[in-house]
Image 1: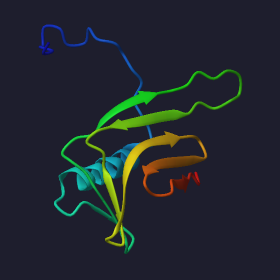
Image 2: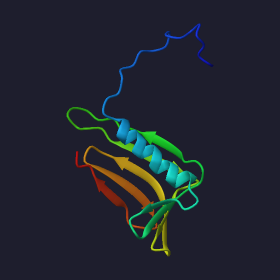
Image 3: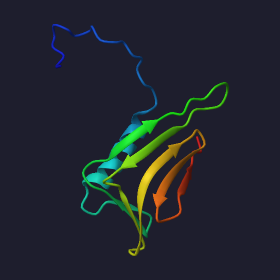
Length: 119
C-alpha cells in the first residue's frame, strides 16, 4: 500500500535515531561492494569477499532475561557470500553472531573470524 497525502501522519510514531549515520553508511557501502562489485570487497592484501546480487537471511534474537545482553544471530541461505583467501583457500560465509563485545563471522571451510567491538 502506498502512503498518500490523505493518510500521511496516521502511522506509528517512532523516535529518531542518533549517532548512527556513519555506521549505516559503512554497512551499506560494504554490502554494496560484496554484492554489486565485479571484484567483491577486498579486505587487507589477501582476502576478498564476493557474493551474488542478494543475500537471503534469517535473523533471530534468542530470548534473554535479567542483565544478560541480547545477541543477534544472522543465518545466511544460498547463495552464500564467498571468502577467497590468498587466491586458493575458499569458504562460504554461513552466518554472523553479534554481541555487544564482538561480531563472529561463521565461515564454512575456513576458521571463523571474530571482530572485537571496541566502543
